[in-house]
Amino acid sequence: MSEVTKSFGATRALSGVSFSVERGQIRALIGENGAGKSTLMKILAGVHRPDSGQMAVDGKPFAPRQAVDALRAGVAMIYQELNLAPHLSVEANIMLGQERRHAGWLRGRDNRRVARDALARLSQSDISLDAPVGQLPIAKQQLVEIARALASQARILVFDEPTSSLTETDTARLFAVMRDLRSTGLGIVYISHFLEEVAKIADVYTVLRDGRRVAEGQLTDATSADLARAMVGREITELFPHAPHEAGGPLLELTALSGADLPKGVDLTVRRGEIFGLAGLVGAGRSELVRAIYGLNAVRSGRVHVVRVGPAGHSPRASIARGVGFVSEDRKEEGLALGLSIADNLTLTNLGPYSRLGLLRLPKRRAAVAEWMARMECKAAGPEQTIGELSGGNQQKIAIARLLHQQADLLLLDEPTRGIDIGAKAQIYRLIGALAAEGKTIVFVSSYLPELMNVCDRIGVMCRGRLREIRNASDWTEERIMHVATGAAANENPHRTKVP
Image (cartoon, rainbow, N blue to C red; front, side, top):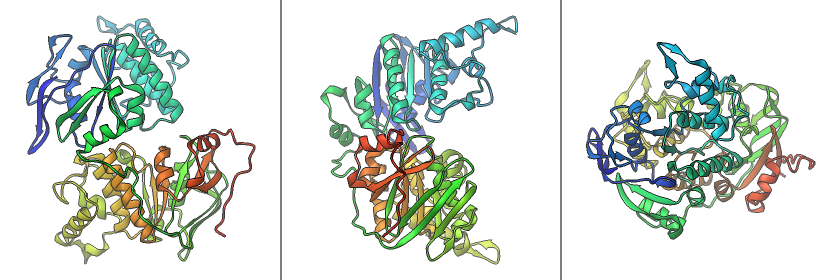
């Protein structure tokens, strides 16, 4: 890719970016949200057309008009949000759009053979071709999407944040697959915000900032600090900024809380002004626990009690009225209304300050939302901009601002930094600390252990629906957390804690 430029209206997304990947090479493409990484790769994959610049594959001019043109030329992109038809079989998903056929008839045996060979190339022959893909674990679904790319005879694979929903074990397996593909001569582009993962898997790197290429080279010659400095254009002295805060009396009390399936018999007390982290593997029940607290998931038995307010209701409406707010791990599907404005997303849970006689006073709301945006350091054109146009980090700031706007005292944050860059993460960590200093209580679910250990006051580890052990964050090690999370400590008694 040579001198590629792309604008969306008045916004310049890319300014003369040159980029290359060789056979048998894994090139990391890194940068903050909004740096232009996804736009550059979507141009490569035929989703967008560049305003100017040239591309070549194997030395031959390459100018795809749509995604299918890029796929036929050997370029396949695997997105952070998997593009699968969950109700169709594994075989149908692998062959979708590239079915072998003759005279208008599908060649069933050939399709099955190609799908089987693609899975075998990934050492995944145990995946049933007839299984509905929606019933597979997320890591297996990702492998099905890679198999679809291989079935198309792709020579260049682009992975966009592939590990954001994977466990540490699944990430290690994915990296093994990527190394095997590299050894067969494929060129791989790896987009990620996790610099420690980049160091493990990539050979070379390219850094984009504000739509320009600002650095590239061999990863053996760069430290994580070098990469972070190139990404943000300044020294990052605090990856995990800390705001002094002290825990007060109890605010949230759970007594033998059980859901329809998960969680199972959870007892927990979280104090006012405390940041409480929840660790565990995918499927351990962390999300189910905070959703049950909020009223999104049914409670089969037990009690959720917010001190000085009373029992929490079993619906989001009741929870909001009692000062409980929730940020979903899935921004796209349920965390935000991506087609609505920033103002709508920030105020929909509390329109009272702007309503009079059943009508909204839009100028008053617009002014208030502008103040919230300034407070949250949200980069956007204005309150009426569609929130789906913002970067992931700015979307997440508005999601948290919605909780503050509705005057929540208890903030349930499920993977609040997933898919956002290190600069935006640091801002959210700083915000969480400031909220705790104001007396807000935060329950923080995360699969990224460094942030739990550096941001939280206490951490509880869940395994198979139960809260197995709680310690002060300073008393945990990553090894101990994984030991408990994987069930290796199953013979130990679950730790049920109460505030003394």
